[in-house]
Amino acid sequence: MSQLSEEQAEEYWRRNVSLMIKLLIIWFIVSFGFGIILVDVLNQFRIGGYKLGFWFAQQGSIYVFVILIFYYARRMAALDKEFHVEEHDEEDH
Image (cartoon, rainbow, N blue to C red; front, side, top):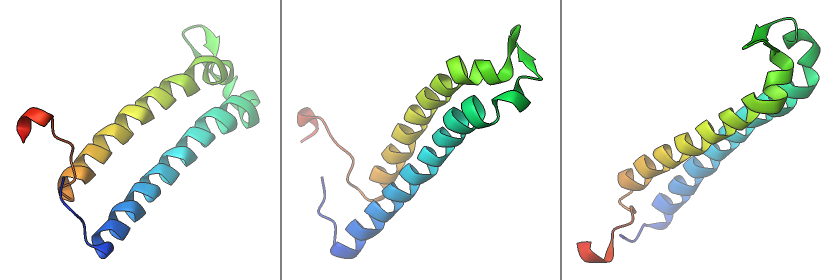
């Protein structure tokens, strides 16, 4: 793992926090917005036989959360590689 300058470390964490905030906003919109606030509007539509608002409250927000976890891991791996701070196995040294 390489040592980052103070400016690089600040940029790395700024981008990390920015990504987390964006993903948390998406998760909030999907779980709270679609599952609670907009449930009546979304219930006018059906997915797999279930009302869409109900589906988001029970299943959709969980699926989106899992997708966001994988997306975050992928984006952070790319960010780590860009800043040359990716983790290596002990055998790589």
